[in-house]
Image (cartoon, rainbow, N blue to C red; front, side, top):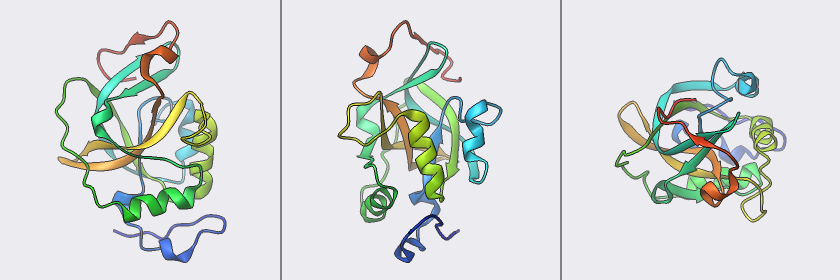
Length: 171
């Protein structure tokens, strides 16, 4: 399955990007039925998905990833992040599940959607000290481990105030 990328000033060299290169894993208020899902209205739902990590909440969900399943860190620029994925050769590692986090995975091809997601999460680039990082993370989709972009807390739990674990892994 191939779908052309669209967006302001997006280079035609990226028109061959495949599904696995444009996946986003969401685990909280971006899922269907939650208020922030409106950001993903024009993107293609792929599957209900699971991954490894710990979910916390204090009115909003926080994802703390297991570092061994993190691939590349996002840059601020949409086109550079797509280039990173297109040139990456490393396959998503198989997950040894201990703490499952459940969410949804979408194909995100629109540059303005990436920008809106970054704005919502307060993400300004990997080198900027914000609450969240954007990174490629191993997720299980239909029995196969694939890379998907997601957001998770920088420096883990110390950024959370009065947050409690979501033992079910479902927000």
